Amino acid sequence: MSALARPLFAATAVPRARPLGRLAIVALHAELACSPKPGLVTPFSRGSHQDMDAGTFLRSLFALRGYFTAIAAQATASADFAPLRELGIQAERGMLAATGNVNTHRGAIFSLGLLVASSARLHAEGCPAPSAGAVCEGVRQWRHALLQAPLDVGSPGQRARVRHAVPGVREQAAAGFPLLHGVAVPVLRAALADGLARDAALLQTLMQLVAVTDDLNLLHRGGAEGLAFAQAQARGFLDAGGVRATDAPAHMARICHAFEQRRLSPGGSADLLACAVFLLQQEAA
Image 1 (cartoon, one colour):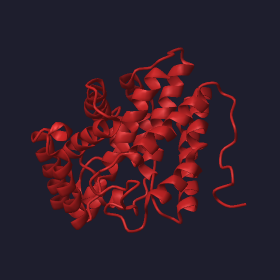
Image 2 (tube, rainbow, N blue to C red; image 1 turned 135 degrees about the vertical axis):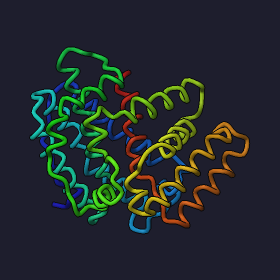
Image 3 (tube, rainbow, N blue to C red; image 1 turned 30 degrees about the horizontal axis):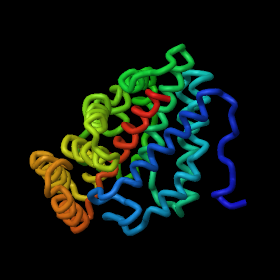
Image 4 (cartoon, rainbow, N blue to C red; image 1 turned 90 degrees about the vertical axis):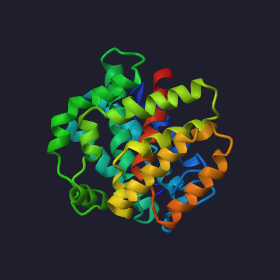
């Protein structure tokens, strides 16, 4: 049986698990489909990546389709962190098997998985429609376990984290994802309420995140200089009016070219964007 066909996670009958799992996959697909995005893979561009394209991401999503349902079901049954972490480890193995050892969604497996688990836990505790802020805050219940869990010190992100002495996604999660409830969710919510098309709202949110996030993928690829360049480009785009500016498409095309020339890719910000999409969707589910 191929890696794509082999079920990694048992089917579950927990009522909220399947809807939350589907919303997580929908959110990741929305991030992939958003175009243009500087340095990131879209259906029309590899961005700054030579080892992956949209097809690689779709294979990864197919492999992960049961993971988010499984972590929701597990969190519904118990608040223990250890089985949640084990599900994440299994999901990463499945992703790598499906993509030929290409890391497409490691950050999302961690961050989005925790948010799905938190939403499911809140449902189990009697909150039928948890707010995005409540879901982010709910991740703090695993703060101690998150900060004590072993890290893959050989991963590019962790090497960049140590080299540049910046907090990573683990610290974001332990703090209740302040970049999500303080930046991404409010920006995305306001952009959609303002009538922006989905891709425009997503791009506006992404650029807000790039402007303020110590993105480990940018640090890994470009060092401190690359991160500073990316943040300055994002701030310049926003200061010029963002997606609402009349020359926004041409401005974004220049930024995309500059990122690709420098091999910069804000993968951490992209993960947070998908998380923000999920958080808004689960509010209405």
